[in-house]
Amino acid sequence: MYPDATSIADILRRRAEDQANDVAFVYLSSTDDEDVVRTYRELDRRARTIAGYLADEVQHRGPDRQLRVILAYPPCADFADAYFGVLYAGATCVNAFSPTTPREAEKLAAIAADCGASIILTHSSTVEAVRTALEVAGLSAGPIVATDRLTGPGHSTAIAPGHGRPEDDCFIQYTSGSTSNPKGVRVKHANLMHNLTVIEHHMQGAKGSRYLGLGWLPVFHDMGLIACLNYPIYIGRPNVLFSHQTFAQKPHLWMSRISEYRATHTAGPNFAYELSARIARRANKETLDLSTLKVALCGAEPIRAATLERFIAAYADCGLDPCALAPAYGLAEATLMATGSPVGTGPRFLDVDREALQSNRLVPMQAASNADLPGQTEGWTRRLVASGKLHAMHRLAIVDSDTAEELDEKVIGEVWLRSASVASGYLNKPSESDLQFKAQLADGEGPFLRTGDLGFIADEHLYITGRLKDVIILNGANHHASDIEAAIENLGIAEIRRSVAFAVNDMADREAVTIVCETRAGMEHERMEVLAARLANELARTEGFSVGRIAFAAKGSIPRTSSGKIQRSLARTRFNQNILELYYIYSSSRFSEA
Image (cartoon, rainbow, N blue to C red; front, side, top):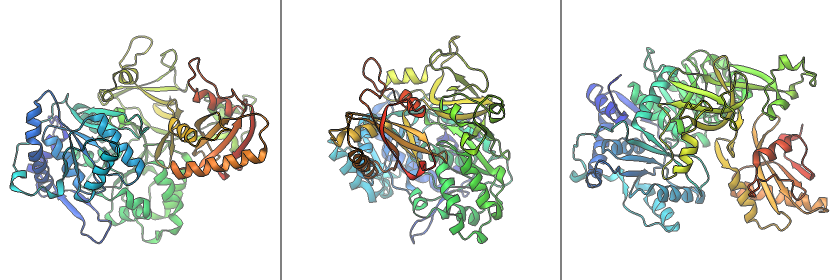
């Protein structure tokens, strides 16, 4: 460890001197090609080559105008070379991806337009896809450089790696939001270094006698970038990576590769653990040995107790230690981790009354039995999972979002965070940055990051119960309610006057999209059935998800502000309380027991 290091690039440079021949990471091939092995020396050499290419442009801009460089790679080892090459040059990484769908192409173009990057680095196999995405959006493509072909003597200048100043932007992390309004989080070198310290406190990768990380998370997302790339470099331990596309096609490879490489640390979102539990019966479990796994981090989306319980039960006979499961809470605006589970403690559960929770009231089931509520049946209970323990390097508060008063323990409110890990704001969005990153408590304490997530604290552990933000997470992908509503409007269905989309948990506590559409009175039942089927099919085709419920309601049922803005949270509450005037409701099989 290098306590005086000011950036992750500085740490890589030193490791290239002190651990030159040690393996930094291995990238497993998804074809018959050889796996890619990067020692610290090789990673440093390749990063210097890319930095040499960028040097003239960086010097031209001067120290007060950082060069922003988009990284638009397919899953491959070259992303890591480019990431550290940009940092070596003293520039800022803009983490993106090579587009494979029209929606991804639209988002890449929106990122390019927002960040103003003049250079895009990618792999030779995807140069044309990147160029086409920009041209279709009407953007003039600057240099699009295939870094795997930077081999000439003019590109291999052995420049001294830059020392990123703590106050400089290290990378811009675009959140998984609406393509029409991309938000780039400005993460400084100081933010990253602070958060890596927090992560090490929870993961303890440098303290054990043996560490081998293994992951498939995409490195253009914050969790994959930091947990699978930056953190292993930070602690000087090796990591094994493979493509998230490979995981999507062959999810059983996650557990089999943990067993094969005897990995000690891994990470993934809730849906990945759910998928792994479902396919366990089809896996060749008698060959799996998961006994070496010390930390299986679970974060990035709502964590379901049933998922963790199924995963533990599915692999108990493979040597899995239940205490290896480590729920965590984080977000890009806080660099990554806000709370995490200490090594070896395992998940913590709390049973609460489901109906009370839908109204943001916390009623533990032990207390509910004495509160004249319906009997304690499985249908009335929701089991919550703690998303980790509070950390001394963060100040986390649960706040009444209307009054800015800090709330007591076991009272639900918005999660606010004050920490050196919190980023400086959104790129080119000063008003949104002020609103999200400069909140103050009623007593004047601040600034705090408003996360938009709802939760409570119990016994120094954070429990997340919902969101104020209009984001619906389905199978690891974020869907903005406004995008869903716009997609419905674009269908041009005359009978639908207005719609609102929000998330409602199904009977298995998985988030599902619910849509309420205002329509005329007296519409035939058969016509509403046809329209519901059309909506479900079109949203599956264009947005890539299955709708949980579609309801048709009377005109004026969807609540709005005085200025006409849809109040989605209030609409969700009224729907849950059955006080909307509904004509018809379609429910998928996920709600068949409701």
